[in-house]
Image: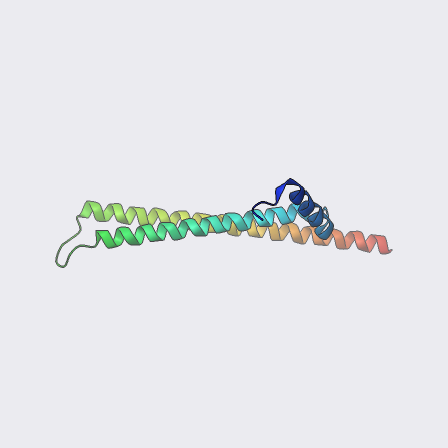
Amino acid sequence: MDNIGFPGMILLLILALVLFGPKKLPELGRTVGLAVREFRNAARSVALEEQASSKDAAAQPAAGDDIPAAERAKIEQEVRERLEAEIRERLERERLEKEIRDKLEMERMVQQNEQGSVNR
């Protein structure tokens, strides 16, 4: 069972359509996309942290040695840039999550209004 193949993919799409319905599939796709993006960002940040820790270990001076000021400034700048990038990613992720929550809430309210008008 190496590959699902084209017929298997079609079967999975039909099954997803039946289980979740046509209105929920785009939302499900966005959620899966966000999860994949979040996983990639986490993997990238782990790799960056590992690189930084290996750089820090290599940059650690022997007992009594001092790091030159230019090299220290360069290291501090790299750390600062990495932290700023992580903060920007986190803020963007929070903004997207809030936007999704707001859209879901709005859809839920619209559905409740539609159900209320149908029941009358």
